[in-house]
Amino acid sequence: MEQPTAAKRAKTGASGTPVFVCEYHDEALRCLHFGIRRRKVPFEGLTMVHFDAHPDLSASTTLPAELILEDPHQVYYALRNDVAGIAQWILPAAYAGHLSCVWWLRPAWAQQIADGDYRVQVGRALAPVKAVRRAAQGPEAKRLPTEKVPEKTLEEPAQVGEVDMVESIKISCAEPYFVEDDIYRPPAELRAPRPLRLAVSQLDGTPPVQLGSEEPWILDVCLDFFACGNPFLTQATWSPARSPERSHVRRTRPGGPCGDRTTLQRGAERRELPVRLCAGRRGVPPRARRLRRGL
Image (cartoon, rainbow, N blue to C red; front, top):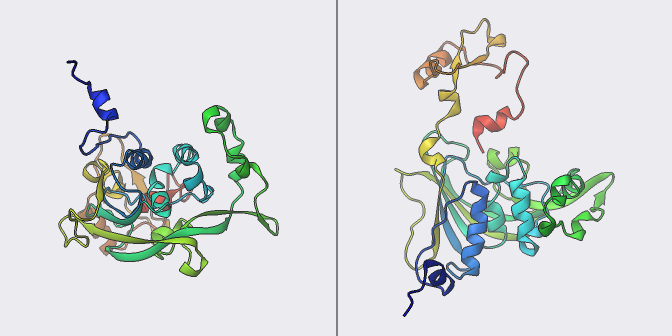
């Protein structure tokens, strides 16, 4: 009798824990949906243990929240073509009800969100946006005929005065990480909210979440947890400040010395910390604030 191949065994629903390896972190959302379709994990109520140097808990301000449940392929496409899409895949899963708890295990230097056990809500709310129609009708959409933008996104958006509005994903956590990305909203302003437990801790600390065999949970590991360091400690050195008002950071040349924590502390004691971060001397470079606190 012919033995079934690995592909055939997979199609017949063989038991086992599926493992996926992704190049881009936003592709993990596709893997989660695949596991749900194959009934490897339940549709809702999942706890996710998230090893990463970055929270990946941002959300797109131009993506209509309704697409997450109506057309996941459009969500995949939008995340892949967004410059910050790799950091925007967890909250859509929480909004859809798949994730009820996210435990972010961070390295010591990653302090984008303070350690704690947050009980928040994830829903949708109106926000001004001007890029939805341009993104929907751009040349990228024509190159993917199998992932056409639904007609409803091509219609005129709801308008308040002269500003286009779209209902995108928001969260009720008031941490600066969410406020600075403009995805924070008070619970009273959220529509279709879903509860989310967000736990943040280091690996060697007291675990805020107890994992057991009774409640389903999944593991997400990003190699950034092991490979990433603080870019302000490994890619920049502090140059002597001519004055507190004209302090600046000098980028390290390839193969040159790197600033360490002792150097930074010594500079802080002498009040030589930079007032501005410059590439040359033209002021703050684009997206410097996001680089400082990470995605």
